[in-house]
Amino acid sequence: MANFSEHALAVASTGTPATTAGGRPVVSIRNVSKQFSNGTLAIRGVNLDIGAGEFLSLLGPSGCGKSTLLRIIAGLGAPSAGAVEWPTSTHDVHGAAERQLGFVFQDATLMPWANVMRNVMLPLTLAHVPKAEARERSAEMIELVGLKGFEKAYPRELSGGMRMRVSIARALVTRPRILLMDEPFAALDEITRHKLNDDLLGLWSAQRFTVVFVTHSVFESVYLSQRIVVMAARPGRVMADFMVDAPYPRDSLFRTSPEYGRLCRIASEALTRAIAA
Image 1 (cartoon, rainbow, N blue to C red):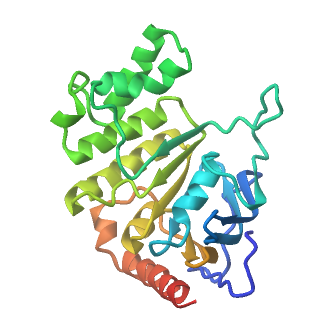
Image 2: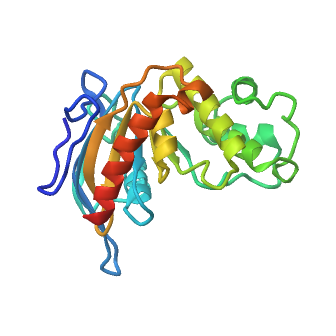
């Protein structure tokens, strides 16, 4: 169970705080704070355990440190205090945990001069995977994200949703244990966003990697997640941590169900309290 600051509130549809999916967590965030060089305290005292195979959303208003926390988990930034632990990871020859991460940014961040195949192959190329194997794995992932037939297309020839599919394929082609997603669908229209939500859940259900998904949408977090962590801003800190006790698979019927409405109210009330904190 996560530890909370004295102002934190744990809410759940079952009336109990959330825990990890079972067993040892794949990553543990221990009293992590981040202060930037300009003096801004972005996050303070965050404690969080994330279970293997869990789909967890970080929900909060803009500026609450969700993306900062995600980048610290990814090793793209160091905490000012506290630590990120990897209890079940193997370690390299230098003793550092091998995190086995995939990261999907807000923008697709594709190489404009490379086609879909070459963009997806990039992490494998950098890892010196043999070219034939890299192409085979990339082709498999391109098909899984629904882009078969677009292997030779360039980013400028793709829609925003298709570019994001390429970004997801590139993140998953290395077969990561954890997929970190920083508001990947925020700029997309609602129809495309719903479709990508469904496809992401399909990939997660089939491969059962761990997902940490940053969003400021109550509706998206409830639809996708097993568990939602609500953060307050200035400084960012955990205010609520609860399970979404709705079964998978989820579809358009779930989006219009009374149960979905009930769970969205729980998340919305927690977010309202976090904003007011």
